[in-house]
Amino acid sequence: MNTPSIDALDLIVLEYVTLFPAVLAIAWSVLGLVEVARREWRLPTDAGWLPTVAVVMPAHNEELVIGAAIEALLAQNHPAMELHVVCDGCTDATAAIASSYRDRGVVVHELITNVGKSAALQYVLDRVDTDLFLVVDADTTCRPGALRSMVHQFVDPMVGAVTGHARVANVTNLLTAIQAMEYAVIVGMAKRAEQFWGGLYTVSGAAACLRTSALRAVGGWTVATATEDIEVSWRLQRAGWRLRYEPRAVFDVQCPDRLRPLWRQRRRWARGMVEVMVLHARFATSSNLALIPIGAQVVGAALWMMLATGMVLRAGLELITGSAPQDLLGGAPAAAVSWAPVLLWTLGLFGVQTVIATVLDGAHAEGGWRTVPLFVLFPIYFWVVSYPSFLAGAWQAVSSSRSQVWERTDRVSAPLPQPTSVAGSGASPARPQPPR
Image (cartoon, rainbow, N blue to C red; front, side, top):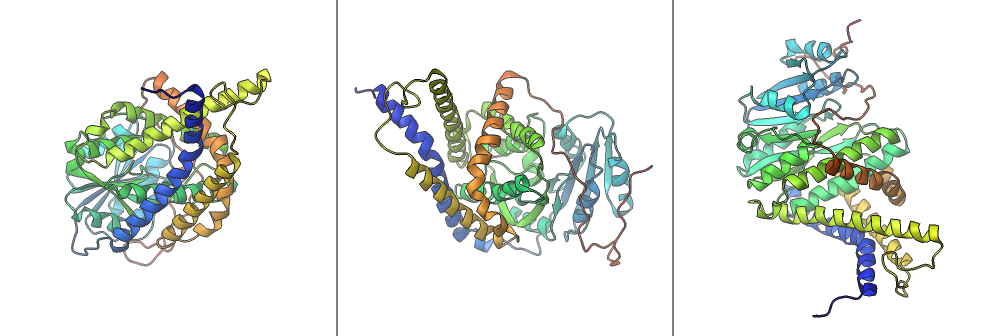
C-alpha cells in the first residue's frame, strides 16, 4: 500500500485549507437555491391552526431593551398566546418594567439568584402546559406576523422546533454592517442549505419555537452549555425530530457594536460548539439523518481551523527563523502553482453567495443590498475577529468546566416598535420608566 509522501501530504493539506471555503460557498448556494425552489416558495399557511404558545423571555439586567421586546410580542396576532418574562437575578429595573405590563397579561417570574439562561427557561417549562414553547431574547423585537409564521410549521407532526429569520437592528458602524451581511450571507444561507437535509445546525437562541412535548421528551433545558440553543437542537435531532427555518418570521436583534463584546460573543459561540460536539460525539447514530451531513460540516470546519492554525504557525516560524519559503506544513518547496487565482476565485464565489442570499432575504426583509459590497472585507473580519475568537472559545471548552452564567451583548436603548396600540385602542403607550 502506497502512503503519501511528505510533499504530497503537504500539498493535500494546503489544498484543503485553500479550497474548503470555496467548496462551502458552492454547496450553500446550490443547496440553498434548491431548498427555496422545493419548499420556501410554498411555506405552509393555515389560519385555522391555533395551538397554544408560551412565549418566554429570559432576562438578566435588560432595562434598556425589554420594553420594546415586550411591546413587539404583545402586538402579535396569535390569540392563544401567553407571555412570560423571567427576571433572572436582575439588579436593575428589568423586573419593574416587565411588571408594568401585568395588566396586559404578562406573567413575570422573579428569580432572586442568577441561575443562568437554561435554568431560567426550565423554570417556566416546569410551569406551563402549552402546545408550543417560544423563546425570545430580551434584545429581540419580532416583526408583525412572526409568531404566526413560525406556528404554521408545526402542522407537520414531525417538526420539533422552528427558528426565525434574524436581522441586525443596530447597523450603526462598519462593524455592525459587516455582521448584518454575515447574518444574511452566512447564517441565513447556511440554514437554507441545511434544510435540504431536513435539519439545522441550530435554532437561534434569539427566536426559537419548540414543540413542548418534544422538548420535555428529550429532557428540557437541563444541559448547561455556553450555547443552550445549539445543544437542544442536536438533542432534538438525535431523537428524530425535524428542525425548520422560517424566513417569514423576521426578528430584529442587537449585535455587538465594538470589538471587545463581539470577541466575547464569538468566543462563547465557539465554546458552545465544542461543548456540543463533545456531548453529542455520536451524532452519526441520530434518528434524524440530517444531523450526519450537518455534523460532518462542523467537523470539516473545525479541521479547517486546526490546519489553518498549523499553516499560520509554520509561516510565522519561517519568518522568525528566516528560512527559505517552503510549503507551510512540510519541508519541501510548495508546488509550482500560484494560489492567488484560487483565493480570488474563492472570494468571487463568496460574492456570488452574497448576492444570492441578499436576493432571497429581500423577499422577507428590506435593506440587505446596502451591505453587499462589504463581502470584500469579510476575509479581514474573519481573520481578525472570528478566527482568533474561535480558537479562544475552543480552548476554553477543553480547559474548563461548563458554565451557566449569563454572557450577552452589551445593550443600547431600543426604540419601541411603531405603530403600536394598547388593547386595540389605537393609542401609543408611553414606555415604562425605571423607578427612581
